Image 1 (cartoon, one colour):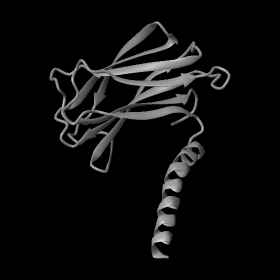
Image 2 (image 1 turned 45 degrees about the vertical axis):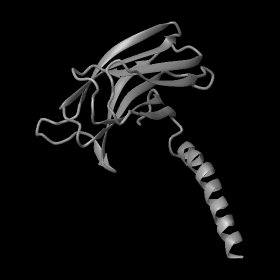
Image 3 (image 1 turned 90 degrees about the vertical axis):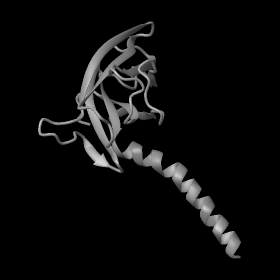
Image 4 (image 1 turned 30 degrees about the vertical axis):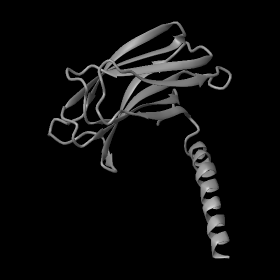
Length: 169
């Protein structure tokens, strides 16, 4: 009897863990088109390695422009006050990538760490650019660091958040 109850509880827990998070996310922010992080290797982030993220746009579903923010999760041992990034995307033309260089400030003028701190990580969000004249289909975003050292240590995750323009995140 005890074994069958335990098995039933485990099964229900697995079902709840798979079904509940997506439904909660969809209720929280209906203006978010895409939000995802990619983990960086524990051995560090090589300057030649691109973090690649892809999402699908459908003009009928997303009739307005979208804003893209680059997000980082840094460990407390990240050694620099800045993080320089190259961010490219093919949102307007599948064959051509628009390239931007972004500076992420990781330390404020007073010496304190920037971002929010939770679970041992500092999370920073940097507005990227407004994506206009969008085409239907898959959009690829590539991000790599432009720091002088390789591999770069202290970066845990790299991600993007894409929201419909005109809505606060």
